[in-house]
Amino acid sequence: MQKQITGNYTYEVFETANALNKADLDVLNAAKHSVLNAYAPYSGFNVGAAALLDDGTIVTGNNQENAAYPSGLCAERVAVFYASAQHPTKKVIAIAISATSKHQKINIPVPPCGACRQALAEYEIKFETPIRLIMSGEDGEVFISPSVSNLLPLLFSSKNLGK
Image (cartoon, rainbow, N blue to C red; front, side):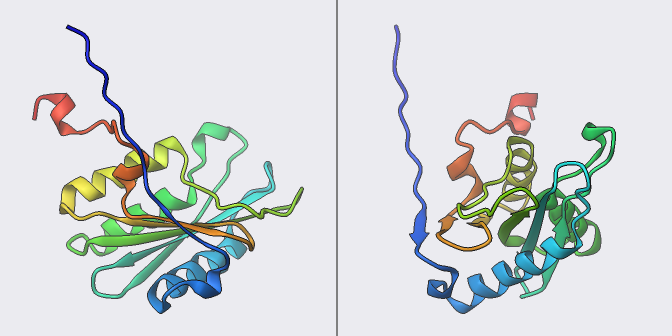
C-alpha cells in the first residue's frame, strides 16, 4: 500500500520590522546589533541572532568563520548554545535572525540553515515549547514562523535513535 503525506508551513509576513510587537522588535533589534560583531572575513556575510528566553533574557550570537570553513559556526547555534550553557533551565521561546553582506544589500528575510534548524529543533523538543523564528534581512519584510518544526517537518529526533 502506498500513501501520500502532504504538509504545509505557515508564517506571518510583516512589511517592515516596525509592524512587529514590542517583544519581537526587541529581540530582532538585538539580532541586528549582534551582526556588528560577526566574524566573517571570508564570505563577507555577517549574521546576528538573538534568543529570547522565557524570563525575558535576550542572549545574542553571531557567525564565526574560520579559514577551514567547516570549523566555523552559525549565529543561531552560537546564540542557542550560549543560552543553554549559561541558562540551562530557561526555555528559548523565540530567536531572531538578521544579516548584512559586504557584497550586496540583504532585503529578504534570512532563514536558518538546515544545521541550525536541526539544532534549534533539539531545544523545542527538550523544553516541549515551540521556538518562534523571526527572520529579516537588513530591511524590508520580516517573516515569523511559529516554530522550528514548522520549517523542519521531518526533523531528526531521539525517536529516530530508538529513545
